[in-house]
Image (cartoon, rainbow, N blue to C red):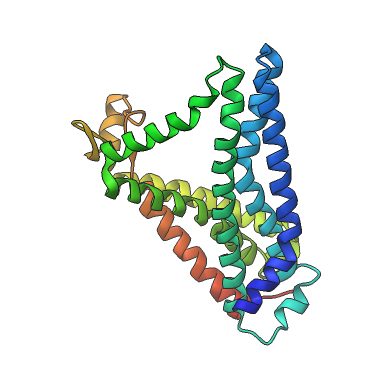
Length: 274
């Protein structure tokens, strides 16, 4: 497994480094433009910086998905599939690397945001020096309201939301590259992804009804509150702005687990490059 992981690192690190470098450069450029305080230029700079920070992780995941397809099912797929290693190990090496990159990209995004925030704020009233202080105060407030258990649960949920996407992208590529969809080239994975997307929407909606719970204010602290989706739909109201429904998590986790299991089975039994 370690050897396979090293291979993934060597095969993709240059492209990942380029993506990270571009994100940092765009964020810095956007922050400098925003710091000017000039109406149009500052707004464009802020938008560029936000897009660079938010887009870093998705772009890295898309790049790794394309690399996954090329190495497993593209021109170099024959070489990969003839390695004297069980297909599941190859799949897990690629997936673990994608997860590590995704989490590192999220950490880098946060770092970029904290680094450029004072510069942006300096051009908007000269309050740049207080940005980090505000972040610390917000963190203390969050701990007071949610408690250590709530904060930990929130971080775990965020991590899960980041790493589920590579598993689903890889599933679309694996199943979309099986016969007979493999005859469509990259269109096969796209069709599978569209089917997965529609299925996810249906199951998530059903999960909202099956798990009528949400995170919201319960007195002066965050806690679990009841979220009745159908009652709100019948009344024509929505409290989703005040609470965060939890129904989507079980559905996404189950779907992702199925995607992983199906992808492993595909690598072990169903790979076809004909």
